[in-house]
Image (cartoon, rainbow, N blue to C red; front, top):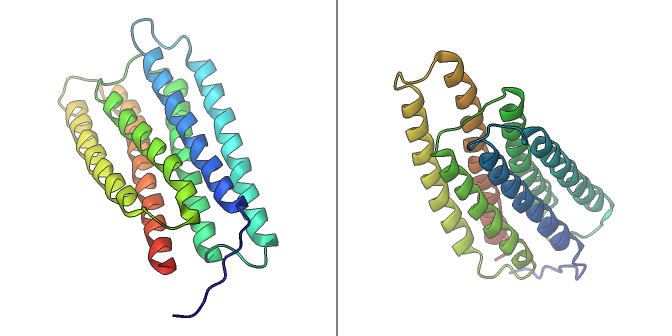
Length: 210
């Protein structure tokens, strides 16, 4: 096996960890939004949407920092293409979460199916696992448990999404409400799927570096 020299500069690992921590913040804000739809409607939705937009902007800045760093670094810790892909995958998660919150606010949704809490719990768990895993890219050790658990959570999210859609098309809700709620839960499902892409990218990196 040819010797591969890896730089000691921890910047990339720190930036990926920072990016994942933004997702932890985003998932927490999602949970706050769900709380605002209970009981008294969405009186706080504007402020929560503003907080999520700020979190999304902060995540974008971290993504841009990663891209600038890789473009100015001669020797990177792993393949440039994989760095770009991982940064993009992490950014996609935040974009989908921010869009879901924005749509709740724009549609003036005063309630969401109870099962949406399960989607958000999946996202919170995925975000926490991802934030805990990013520092381990530096050693490329003990990563398999991450993508295995993310895959399991993604399957859970799929099942929850199917239950919500079945409920929305049960005839209990008017067509406009169905359209609005489906838009939101589809975006949450897209965020869950994007987390799985993050895990797949981490697995690809680990295989290449092993």
